[in-house]
Image (cartoon, rainbow, N blue to C red; front, side, top):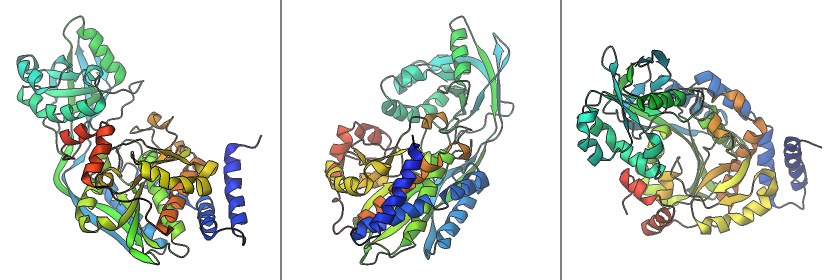
Length: 483
């Protein structure tokens, strides 16, 4: 049997040859050429340059800043003249430092722990105290049990805290840190969910604001041990965190544009976030998305531009709460009416399945002909109505702009997501290239179409989609959405 990957590549090359004949439509011919260019292009080398060359690209870090210069140079090397880095502010820069911990009683043993992002250092010498398990982080409960929290290290009972759903608990967690500090807690431990004491060590908050007190992520097995020991009696821990906080910082988005041939004032945005966490080298999250956008730009710059302009965006601050894309929406508010669609790549490089259209049935219906005629079984023609606010399509979606988020097989994504193992060698090259082809072909087809793919929605219509998806209250609680 011929392997699936061989069939995919063969199918694309065959399509390119067939559609170059007189019987093929202009759109089919051009999209087939684009797909073939992507499959034979340098995107794997681009990804390796990024991940192995810069490593983790924490927002506001020197590594991130260097990667923006590299990305801008890449766009220019494709012959794109209009390339710029657009600055936006974040409240604080942050750099991870030393983290070490141990259990003092009833056992003496080291602990697997690491700082969560944008957490302050512990006092000199660290913190040392008994552990208290907290299952209710409501303001009422914290205030009522302040006496039990004073001078203690708080271990969050995330199983109960998140029992009613992540969204409600996330908003509560956002508000709980200053309350815990006011109650006299020394620090907070946040149990990891990955087995074998593997740490994600990202963040449990948004906004790049420094937390009110030190917060560390504790390995799953260590956290379970602490909980079992708490059933018998007191547990005493000590740990130290040393992190660097640099105060207000300017961060860059990288923007490039190919002007449209007929309707240059109308534009399609193709984006992904360039930043990553500092564990691993940010390959699946989101080096692959970054390299897909760069590859789409390279391929689309080779021929005649489509009718509408193409903007390419590599965002900063996504991991801290979509900060770069949110800043872009605010800075470009006066021209968003001319944005025809946003295409986002940030779900790793699993086998591409199609697009998520954020609950918009009109957009789903409009994409159907494209899926059948150009995508089909080759690279994924599924169109999902799933609504999310977990990556950089989100700020555009809230503005009513047709927003597409790349839909891929994520069965193995969690194995490396935000971990030290998120490295280049985990990327399947052909699935990755197929995703880049899907992104490129879809962007060109939308930019070339006679009519915009779907209208902008008004505020009320967006609100209805959020309500139906049970996202509205979460976004209100986080200060992102006003009904």
